[in-house]
Amino acid sequence: MKDSILYFILAESALESIPVEFRNLAKFRRYAKKQKKSPETIVFDKSIHSFFIDNPKAYEKRGRPDIVHISLLSILGTPLCKSGYIKIFIHTLNDLVIQVDPNVRLPRNYVRFSGLMSQLFMMGKVPPKGSSLLTIHEMTLKELHDEIKPKHTILFSKTGKEVELNNLMKKAVEIKPLAIIVGGFPHGQFEKKTLEIADEVVSISKISLDAHVAISRVLYSYEISSKIDFNNDF
Image (cartoon, rainbow, N blue to C red; front, side, top):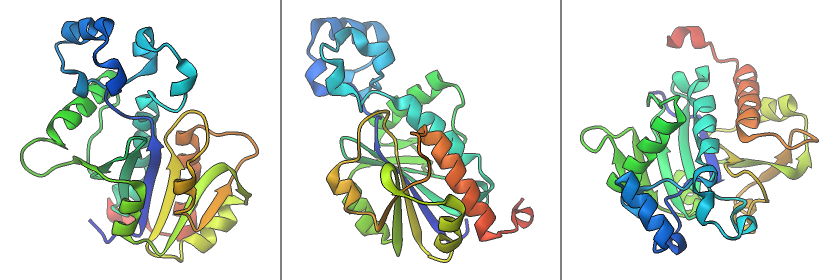
């Protein structure tokens, strides 16, 4: 793998095991027994587990692992990633950080992806033996940021300063290492402590974009601006 020129962080991602407050509910215990899984390894998905959520509003940023799934597929499928120019991190709302090897062959089927995340929660890494393609650690976003030490960090948010993406990327490609942050949650705003990490908070659209759409636009613009000849990498 080439020296990374870009750190990509999917931040405050709605990926977690079943919240602690639900694990002792009788209806959830019956569900877990039927699934033949321990509660701490079941991936929380609001579309599946809505039967034990009494206050949906309180969980509007949570329980959407599908956002992480499709976002990762969007990153991993790019020439930039396949050529080894990106290091990928998933930061979750409950302060876990997953490092994703750019060579991982992620399941395209969501059910299989959810099963893979269950294995990751249980084992701490995937595969459990040999060279790991996915690893998970307790770590805040700031701790991750301090560890990778990017020279400049750009966070993309609907509430950020409006910019023209291609012009932004023409300047950004000159900064190495660069970190890009996109939210991995469905609704709401970034936490203040997340915004404070960024050197720039920018918006590239007047309308809210799904995470995977924003990711695709940003990485494609970065590729074009970088003028990397990917033909030599395949």
